[in-house]
Length: 336
Image (cartoon, rainbow, N blue to C red):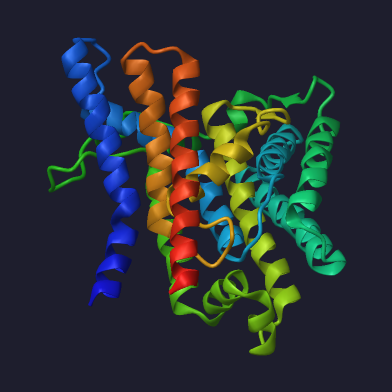
């Protein structure tokens, strides 16, 4: 009974943390009397659309971290895929083909990392640290303008721009009192359901958890560890590719340098959401909560007119706390 209660409490932890962060900034805004308009539906919509890019990429990173891996190239791979989409549009290809090429490019980035990690049996940290600069270089090679590719504006349909609009039409979900969001938010939610189903309702999902928990035990149980690792990195790469397309909707361009530091946000979202860097633990709901926590901190600091360094400090403290809690939980599990 106690173990079941602990599991439920553990799964609700990221959600409770999100509510605490929201309550903190709402109370701070009220007490300080600032006019940042933090506690409003408009702010919720803004956090939602600003979290789409990191949210989609973090879903892919969740698969990797549960499998006991890491991908430091996630940020530059995402930027590279944005450049692929922008380059394709600039060459006269349709938006549909351009987006598919970007997603395929992300899958190829994941395939590259997966083959090296599974084939050379090196630490993923080292492999992806190297591929991080490779992908950024490839993105710059697609452009002769310092890494930025700006396709003609008419090649980007209005429907794609609405992916990250703060004020969708309609503003409220028909027939309900619930606010509506840019369709990129609903895409992220739909993808989250797919990833959750993959992890908990398929053989591949069980294999991913098994590899992250104990690779040697998984191998003895008949799991094809190298092939599964390659597939995990390919699937995650496809998510990175789709996340790169968000730049086309939001910025109407591809930027090879836009991914620098993005990998830290993506990894942090999974860790804050309860994912273990030791592997074998993580959840889709937790990851989405982690993404929203970072978005709320960003908006809250802006609403309170705090300096950017304060936001960085707060986020760093939360990451350290999340890793510490995970380590203590792992030691408790080992001792019992």
